[in-house]
Amino acid sequence: MKRIKINERDNVAVMLDGDLRGHKIALTDIKAGEDVIKYGYPIGHAVVDIKTGEHVHTHNIKTNLSGTLKYTYEPKLGTLKRGDTKTFMGYVREDGSVGIRNEIWIVNTVGCVNKTSEIIAREAMKRYGSVCDGIYNFVHPFGCSQLGDDQKTTQAVLKGLVNHPNAAGVLVLGLGCENNNTPVFREFLGEVNENRVKFLIAQEHDNEIEAALESIGELVEYSKQFKRQECDLSKLVVGLKCGGSDGFSGLTANPLIGRFSDKLIAAGGSTILTEVPEMFGAETILMNRCRDEATFNKTVHLINDFKEYFMRHDQVVYENPSPGNKKGGITTLEDKSLGCVQKSGSADVADVIAIGDHVTNQGLNLLTGPGNDIVAVTNLTASGCNLILFSTGRGTPVGAPVPTVKIATSTDLAQRKPHWIDFNAGPIIDGADLTDELFDYIMRVANGEMTNNEKNGYREISIFKDGVTL
Image (cartoon, rainbow, N blue to C red; front, top):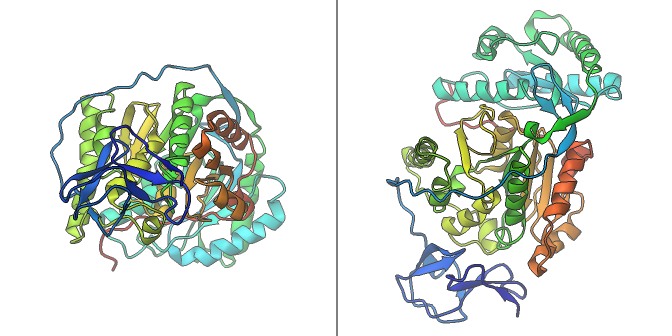
């Protein structure tokens, strides 16, 4: 049976076929208490003696992770060099940002108008859908009965959507009595272009549907001025995400995304890596790639603050991977994390940003937030990602408000789910190098080619919540 040893230091290999496909077997005897090594790093320790050739999984190894840690900055900066200048065809907005779609978005200040926004979006598509790249709304349950940081997080996400360059125009739809009411949210937003952003309070109109359609008509007219033009890749921001991972994620799709990230950054673009709990156990790799000590300190806070969030809720920090991950061959959180961070490539970490913050330092950015798929793609969108690369081994249809490129870890998944999967990384397991092919495909998406989540209407948001609801 075929197997692969990832790193010369490893004492386990990943099976490539058979009943244990994606799972690990021991390459040598491993005594109880000894570390199990994969990707060149410990993914836990053996709890019993493991013989050469035995299956290594949840029944015989456990995580090494615990609570918060102290870290020392030991820089191992990369040698990524600036590559050839490249361009894409985007929509240049009046504030200088660049979108890859020319859509109209309806952003709800509160969940009470979710159904109203759905009706507005449906009717607006009938009237105006052929004039722009589409009219879309994004439902969520928040905006009222929230306190403190939860309301601030909701506002930060909604502000990020309002300011997103893929939206040529935005209708902010409120009810009128919510905590996050329109005057409060407008103050949080700050100054906006009133030709691009319209506000409607449903309680103040006898027929809020018709009033909203009139506003959207004005936004559609505004959107007509934007035409695709050649833009430098420094204006492109790409999110990096994995979900429904399996034992091949860290071998095929995630390293491929990492190589894409390096190539984009070398050409002047930026990428954003999130899913903080899926950095636990691999965080020192990212910390030592921080470009300076200030960025290192921000990364330490990123990791330990999220561990403290777990502990505030009496949850252990290693309560991961998911049942599907385990079925696919991922055993511990370190195992999952070491595969997850492959998406970051080799570039130095340029900055750490909060939910709703946009990239100000070109290159690889780390974004706070959980690993939950819909929350993570929402956070990436709110931080200005034009599109998201989303690797998956088990398969998932979930999509963000922006183009969400699903990259299969295996050919089998790509063939079974062609309506979910946009790109097949499976041939990498047999030695193929698909970096240029993926880069070319992403450029086509940036230039207007639609992804499956766009074709099939998979556009969702979910806002992170931590505190009390009234």
